[in-house]
Each structure stands twice: as structure tokens, then as C-alpha cells.
Length: 172
Image (tube, rainbow, N blue to C red):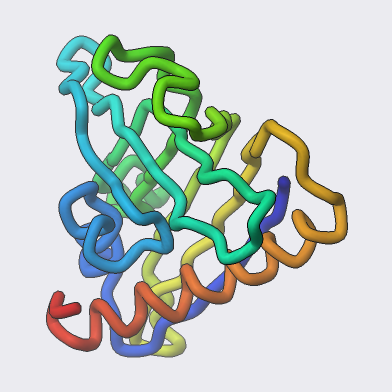
């Protein structure tokens, strides 16, 4: 499943979005049933993170789980004048973890091939702009029409849920 998205949030700073994209905060608002740090990767300045999709109402659909490396970088890009340019959040395949063996819980192991966010200031709306791409391999058997519909649902719920979370001051 691949899609890209551009979202503008008036009156919300890039720092607020970056904070909402940390693992403990994402567990409060993201579309996943569970988001959990399973290992700190100090050498890489990253985290190994477990994601579990919600249970589906469709009988033949198994839950998907993902293990990824999660990079969270404030002011990763700089402007030509040296001022902060943009924050970056990236998820890439994260390998395996002994506490989360593949196929142990009757779930399908997917792969977050590359999910990335560039979060930058947007002065014309007194807020910020997010450019993101999603490239996930859901694995297992899923009809293409279902994946296409899922991509649209995920992008819309991601943008809406994050906005509600930030506007509520971090309350569910």
C-alpha cells in the first residue's frame, strides 16, 4: 500500500506535531490498536517499535503487526540562513524481536518499508505543513480494492485524529 499526503494545520506549530508523533503520544491517537517501544537503539538514535492494527469487522481479515525502526529528529533540515527548517520522522523495517515472534499470535506480519514525515513551518496560515509518504507491505491476502480504500481511510483518519489530539491539549 502506497500513498502520499500533504496536510496543513492552521495555528498549530511544527513542534506540536513532532510531539504528537512520539511513540507514547501516538498510542493515544493513532489508528493502531497498540504502539509500543520494545527497544531503544542508542547507537542509531532510534527506537524499535511494535505496531498492531485494530481488529477488523470483516471475518477473513487478520490483524496486521509491524516492527519498525522509528527515527524522530527535531530541526533535521536547516534553512539557508541557518534557522530551523523542518523536523523529520521516519519509520523503516525494524527487524525482529524475541518478545514478538512472527506468526506467534495469529496475526500477519507486515513491513513498514518507508513511512516518512517532513514537518515545517507554514507562516501564511500561522501553522505548519506536513508532507508524508506511506509505503507499507500489508502481506497476507488482501484484495486490491480493499487496500485502495484502506489507504484513503488511513490518510484521512491520520490527519483528523492528530488534529483532534493536538487541539484537545493531548487528551483522548
